[in-house]
Image (cartoon, rainbow, N blue to C red; front, side):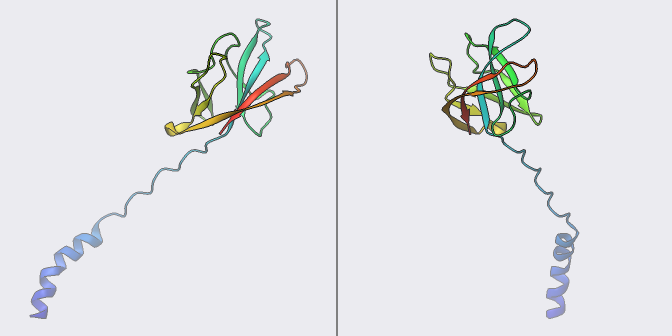
Length: 131
């Protein structure tokens, strides 16, 4: 009887052992907090919205989004090949949140101060940070 049981379960056991191991999940991209503000651009001498990775040097690592009189929301920008965009801008054009890789969003808070840049790069007036 035991031999018959063993012979009955042997094909199932062989199939389970022969199955490949499950693939590992792809690594999740690092999500960065984002700083945002305004900066005079040399090409048109107008202030533009700029963004950078909060906690890292904003000069010269910022991304230019749009003129300051226009909303910065909805403009996609990239850090580490990952897309971000500011969202929920009020009538003052200030963003209320940032949408990060994978669709997760983080709220923004005001943080006004001047960031001094060097050389021909104009200083940045920081408005806030998100994440």
